[in-house]
Amino acid sequence: MLAVILLSLFAIFLFHQFYWRRLNLPPGPMPLPIIGNLFSTIDMANIDNQLLELKKEYGSVLTIWIPKPTVIVGGLEVCF
Image (cartoon, rainbow, N blue to C red; front, side, top):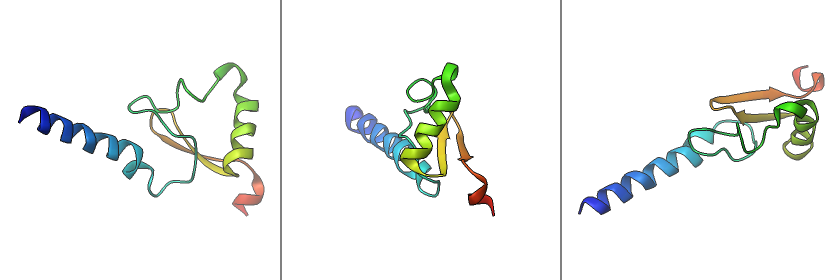
């Protein structure tokens, strides 16, 4: 019985991390639970080229989780 409860809580946690938190945000790379895209997507030594590649893949407005969601606007044409 305890295993079913723990498995259900884990399933709810995964649903919250992978779906519910991303529902109303712009597209972006899939974050890992708790740490986001900190180690999986972002290369801090080459962040300018990394953001240009993400802009090509996801568009001018994208979300990066470091570990909280950060919306990045990739150009002036989106602002005006």
